Image: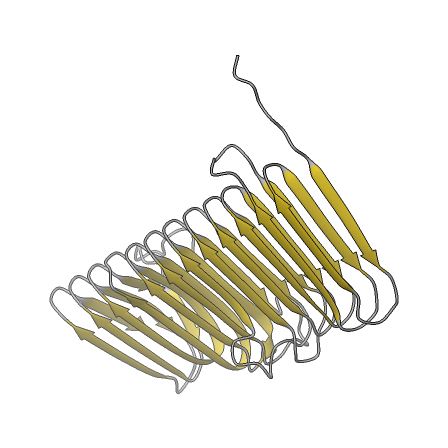
Length: 307
């Protein structure tokens, strides 16, 4: 019988209402859990570093919870790690994971213009998720950002989702590899900005925005079989695809009577550029006076715009 060695280490650090608390946890080995909870004081800092053995059989859990203007950071190396940071007001949260089958989650409860969230994952089968409500990130260059390097990764940012007062949010996803998926969802606010950049093949990018003065930018380069699913109401959008058999379409789960999955655009201006062969665009533009500019360069491409 194979002998299994199990090490469980749990550390809880609690900082109550006192100024500028600082907490650091570092673990080495397998099956280690680390938790940091800090109260309502401002300028708190929390950092967790976890390093595992090089095997897919183990996992580690790290969690940071902060109530006031604070900074939290989690770094994890190897396989099957789980990282969660919860912030409430004008905070900064960072997660770095290197390995495979890792999961990260950042949630901002409320903010007034200076929440910053950053996730970077290197490896395969990783998942990054970020969620915010309230006003966030308007005064930052790249405030809500997920970067992934590798294949079969997934990234989701719900920025101001289901919060009508949530305005001027910025969200970006950058993925380098194949078979990656991304989704940015910004609903119920004005001046929101969504940007997706994917390099590789068979990647999917979903962008959903409703409100006014919206901006969406989606770039897919360096591969074939990429798909953009767009639904925007109230702004401008730009889509660039370079490769073959790429598609711009909608988010519906079933085709229309024409057998199409129509991308939905009800804004002021949409630019679509597709370079390569056998690319397709299926677009339903419903905004009166909207400008839709489509450029396709290659062979056997097809673009359909209806209104």
